[in-house]
Length: 83
Image (cartoon, rainbow, N blue to C red; front, side, top):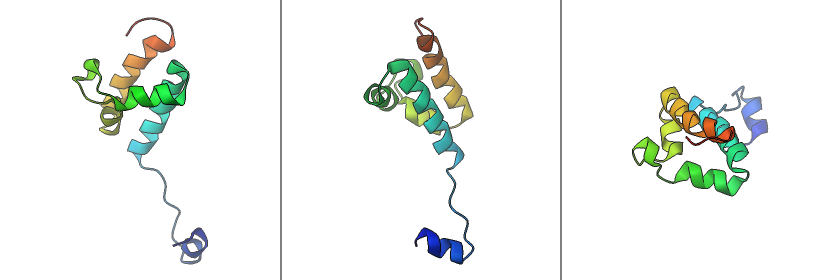
């Protein structure tokens, strides 16, 4: 169904869910830390030892607590110290 059709029928445009918003925000932070989209994607989609071998993206999608755990890894790196 096209956007015009949805509008005609009074159907609201879909909005991203909270998990997608969290992931997008953490992805932006990872891009700032790592300096490129490729490096940010590598960080987000590879298992990480500080997350018990889980992928940061999966942890973020899991909830706000997961987002905070991943930000706790990225935060020190953003300011030049080891996580």
